[in-house]
Image (cartoon, rainbow, N blue to C red; front, top):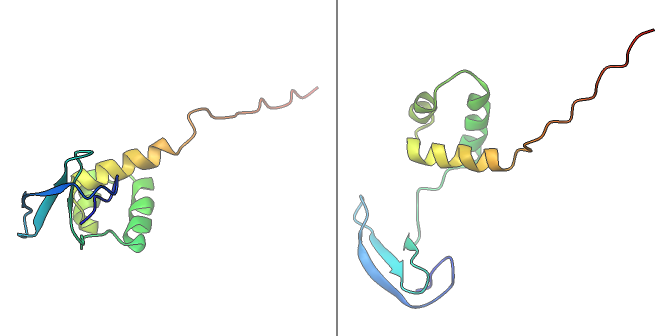
Length: 97
């Protein structure tokens, strides 16, 4: 077994997750992971989340409707905001004579 981050084979068992799948920890980088994770968020759900974020809906409401955790949604939104430019380029309108 290899760590998904650093690809080290120096991993140990580190308990279990909520559905009793074994959890592992990398001794090299400290990352915790599950072998063969099943709960990936589909691109369709991400597209729906992107549309719902543009509406005036709370994050808790979006999480309930789409079926994702609020924690995951919060990290997803933060990741989206990192990719947005901080400065907006606004051109002054030309003065009419």
